[in-house]
Length: 270
Image 1 (cartoon, rainbow, N blue to C red):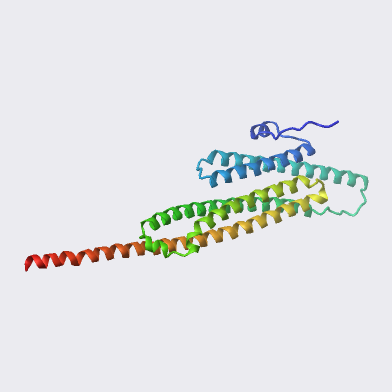
Image 2: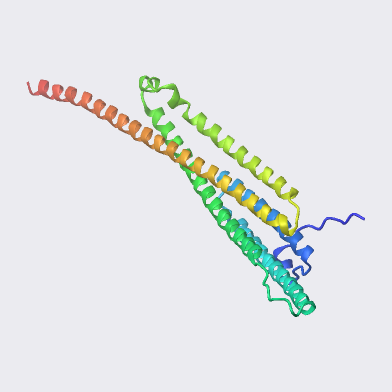
């Protein structure tokens, strides 16, 4: 008989009535991780859309992260209890066995993977915020640059090369490619996470794969951040160049007007 799908519990439900069985804990942790990734995507879309009202979503995100941590602690405690009970039963069955201890490396590796995942998620969130800020600065610089170019004489505008004229279009194309790449990456990781099976031997492989995916995403975000900073530097240089050019043109116009006024003054005195 096929069991019906149970949607993820809310944070309030988890605090009041958390799951107690091992299978229920594992299923709920996976569901809450999907909710966490979905919240990450929503916040990123809101920031890229220029919305500053992300406080409520971020508060929900941290509440879900805290709930996942609580569930993982309960799962770890339940596994430790089962292992301790198993060791007690084996010790009672073999009292003369020379006291061998189980290797806790699996627990340590799982804990390290969890900590590494949290660190990578924090780094990813920070990089996304920095990239969103760089994009906002690029948009602002582009608007200022367009305004300054419109103030230039037509002959000066015609001197601009094609690469400078296409900078805005290339930036917009890069932004669209970056957003589509992030969407494809998250979709592939969701499919990969859905295909991973449970089990003690496969759990470490799953964590390692997730960590490698997060590290690859972090590298891509770092590369995009460096590229956007270079674009910002180029735009600032172009902005300074156009500002100096406009000031020189205005000064030249003032200088051209000054001799005519002086000549009129001399003629009047003469």
